[in-house]
Image 1: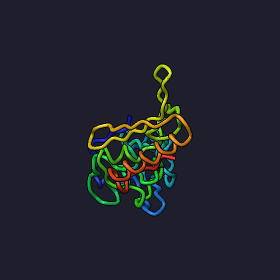
Image 2 (image 1 turned 30 degrees about the vertical axis):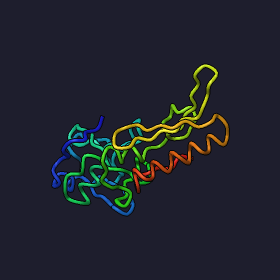
Image 3 (image 1 turned 60 degrees about the horizontal axis):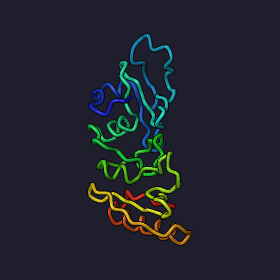
Image 4 (image 1 turned 135 degrees about the horizontal axis):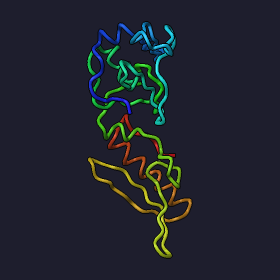
Length: 178
């Protein structure tokens, strides 16, 4: 797993890499050590991990590329959480990166892959003969939920309620359920 702590010193980053904030490309301008045969000078650095983030290995330590991009552009250590506005983890354009709290970062996440409804914050519940749509949103660390009838109108109402509550709480970090 890539490091989220301190990155290499800024001088080390600029000795090895170039960052274009408009394209988000981070390219190798030098090899981190003489035996780094796989590194091609001028090539885009890093590779995508299983979570979709680009990881760059420097001095045998993996680092998240969005954190490197932040440090190279702002010339300071990145905040603990960096949000990708468009939700695309490999988009390293500086305009796509913004500081966030953990709550804000979570608010801008995609629907989880194991979601049965396929809609963020919405699920169907079944208890005996009772079934309903349940909408939920986390507000100030507490999950708030509301149930709706198990029909198309109920599903639409659940989505609308969840979107309204999430937008109030998370503002620009809000990701709409559809």
